[in-house]
Image 1 (cartoon, helix red, strand yellow):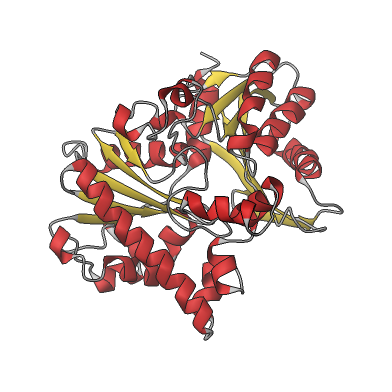
Image 2 (tube, rainbow, N blue to C red):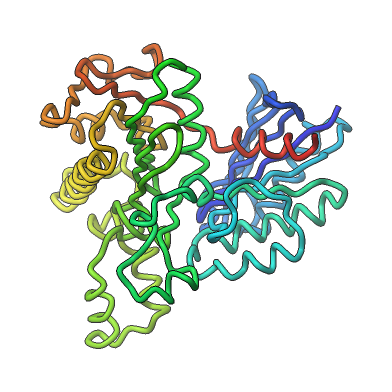
Length: 388
């Protein structure tokens, strides 16, 4: 029996999974290597009811991929890895769906490294490592930008001279694999509804909102890069371009220094001066931690209003991602006082959302759900489909 391997390389972690190759793949094992920025990353592998853990001897994405390949070898039990599916954050303007990755495509995707410097280099590095480890396997790229490629022009452009749009300077949107999975889950949960006006809040170390109508993205808070929109763990979110000019001209910072500031030193970590971990911020009694949480919530509420305007109303609001799925306090803060939009949270259900049918945590006109997203399953489906 053939298997597919999924690799989801982020800025500080790599998620991976092993599935039977099938139209709806069966999960055999799933794992995570986290704290890649440290000298001793941690690998966890779950196979059925068994969990194995160990600390790696060195940090970095390359060492993590090697450790993952060693960890999944016993899971394969002699079965062939027929396809490897990869999350690739940026697919540019041309990729609107999964695609077989060739050396030529890899070279082309290098062009988008400046657009997603925290993710794209690691995504492509994982592809190269898998090509070496599994030379006979089909390599399949699944692009976080693909779900948003059908945007109307007004949601796809900036008010710059048209030549920049033609060169690819446009709003791409991200977290598309997560939004694709959630859209499918909504259809599965209530196939007769079609969730005509839906906002999905993907809240984690990276965070964004997406407006979905008829199963397709019509608006996103993220734009040209994964910096825009909501404040994130270490990323600034929306910022006045004049601030960047000020940093260049008055602070004398280089573009590299500004990139490090906006991508790695800002967001919840920068505002709080404490951490990018929402759990630590909620547990802290420091005023700066509370202010960082308040700003995070404020921006989510503001963007919900904006996405509702894009949709012309709201039928469904979904929370997913590490914070969205697990931080009931954040969901409560976001939904408080939003009854003008039809959002009314069921406080009791919000405390134990995954025990509710369909994750429903509301009692108002707008159905509020908490759903576990599964980017790896989207990748596994695409990898399996490439074998047909």
